[in-house]
Image (cartoon, rainbow, N blue to C red; front, side, top):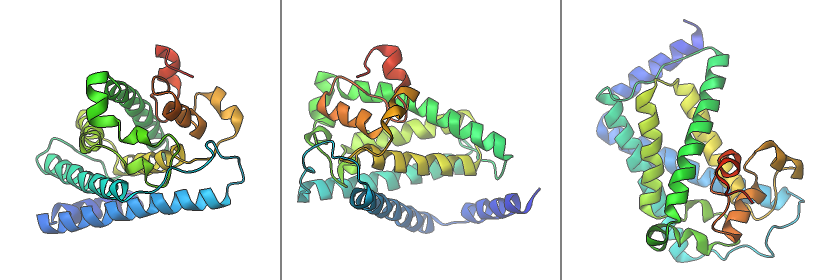
Length: 240
């Protein structure tokens, strides 16, 4: 066992000793931090990126969107706590450390599998009888702003979280792989909702879900349901 794995094992042991009050505080603190990190990353890229705007101006920041974004943070807190319940009861197991190559493969597997699941989840959210209830608010942001990623119906946020937890019950991922995936997910979501292109134009041909790719979805709600890649849209005929 190497030093890093020893540290991770000690951290997992300490987390197992947490009371529910400590877990609640941890969940709130980490999710608020990630929320503020996303907003800060968006504003930093928006101010420093010299690429042209995808839309003429950002969607206005409203009080209702701010409140809904905080509800999204609360839902993420609840999902994390439910994940802890599953972990404490043996439904989810995480490993303390793995070789770098295996961690890389696990992250790629998570990205591709979650991208597929989110494709179908996102497609279902656009069915007429679901869209008006769950997803229409998010699509009020035809152009975007730093809150757009978090302007979601609570069922959407919880649904994504439950999909992630379901995947984790099927395979014992490394805690490092899970952490890297979740960080990529946040960064990708933030970049995907920028109002200016972040990726080079040629990235579209490499099946990458670029900023322009997701912006096109906000312009044409029947296309581009993928998140990290355009693979599934190309495969199922919804790519634009």
